[in-house]
Amino acid sequence: MTSITGIGRSLQPNLRTHQVALTGAVLAATGYAAVAAFTDRDVADALAVGLAVLISWMIGRELDPDRTTVAVIAMPLAFVASVYVVPSLLAAFAVLIAVRLVAGTVGAAITPVDLAVLAFIGFVTGSTSVLWIVGLAIGMWLFTSPEVGKLKPYGLVALIAGTVIGAMVADAQDIAITQEAYVLAAVGGVVMMLAMSPKTIVSNTDARSGIVEARRVGLARKAAGSFVMWAAIMGGVAGFWMVSPVLAALTATVVVKWFSAGA
Image 1 (spheres, one colour):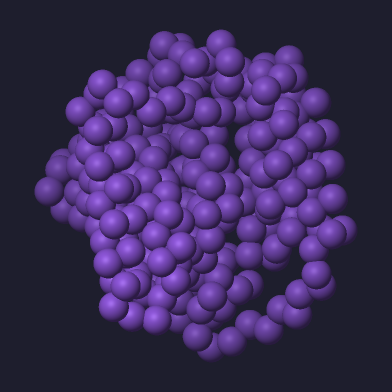
Image 2 (cartoon, rainbow, N blue to C red):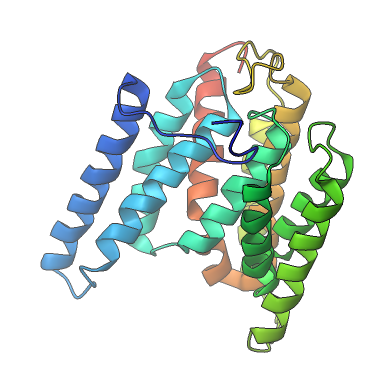
């Protein structure tokens, strides 16, 4: 996989942990469809909810590469949040990529395939103020990370070009920071502080380039919390719930930290 992409990670149905993730996503979609059948919700959102729950599992794996329990706990939390307000899949996907890159769990250089992904992520993050900080985090990773490789300048160009195009085609947004936004940002900040840095990490990177750095996983947790806080401030209530899979994974990280000395 790492010979094809330095960003993507595969789902392997033969692994039990991945079977749990896929099963959880299917159950979430089915559960939402059942809820929608008895309410005025749109049944078509069931697929989005299932994918959002799967993304929360993926983010959980980035925030704690050693303990799959974090990812498993994140799934029902993401489902409950999605029943309340269906999140944005594009926003959740953009945050997943940013958290993954900051954490350094792949450990491989970006490839030509990844340039298209970076351009797309740039487009998504540039199209809404709620995600500007996500694009900035990825740009900082491209500029500073040791594993970026020789395609660094091309990656930066792809990200910037996508961001500019996204900003140009997006509708102008009025940013009005409300009291509710500050409260929700504070919630995200508290969860982030409780998650903080892991004490130890023993998992290898996907590229087998070494052990995933605990310092970088800690930075990924702080980045995830910052994304939630920024989304709340710039997007208010809607922005906060837009990235609920991230909050679910962060909350699951906190829960596991209570019971695990190394988490």
